[in-house]
Image (cartoon, each protein chain N blue to C red):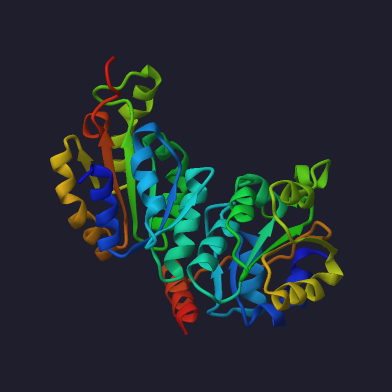
Length: 184
Length: 168
């Protein structure tokens, strides 16, 4: 499976949760598959999906899922110690690890070579790190939500993209409707 | 009252409940003070752009955030300020130690000091410069202004404000 197929697969699970979605194709794909006010689409700032999600989880009680990529986590690797040392049991970091920078033309990342993000997360002190294959992402994600324990999921999938339009929604509209959904 | 207590009192009085910090020698006292306050969730970050991501999330979760950092961090946060904090119109008070100004002992700090105000001006970030401790009287109004206009706002605090580095 490629990332967009995973997102399609898990969309019914994501629909009921607060989701912070990574810049570029992941946000565009989620927006096309199942646009919801509970989705916060990042239009810029590569690497900060996990940080925004953690801040959100620490500030309120609802479950928050940050959808990130291996390349974006590598961009902001300092996020993993911060997550490990500030446990929010309503927080799930879902790293869709296709071993490539998908939005920029599938250049390989180091996570697709020797670096194992699941091992990095564990070494940083993250306590619940689950590695799974693409087809099992929905099952693992639902288990993580039900466990009410902060969980890092590394879902291994194939590299590849679909053609789709950019998000033209105004950022303030995205933020405003998201904040209303957080409060609801 | 110490200047550290006064600053954190103003944060608390303005409803700031989520503070991220990247340390600086000059900010050590104020960071210690943040850590002692039960009203504030203190989360140290490893890099300032990461910290701004945490603040953005906390804001959307209903908490007023603030970041405490050195002016060198302006060099690593331009993109985050433009494409996250400003683009989505979020408030962010930035209490910044202004290294490389008068009474600075480390020459390299001057290299970012000379760019600091120019970069903030280029970003259209409202900027205040505290040079003496009396200047901190304005902090309460600066915080109110920040949360009124939903913008990042810079508060530069130089070595003179913090009382220098002792005998040099």
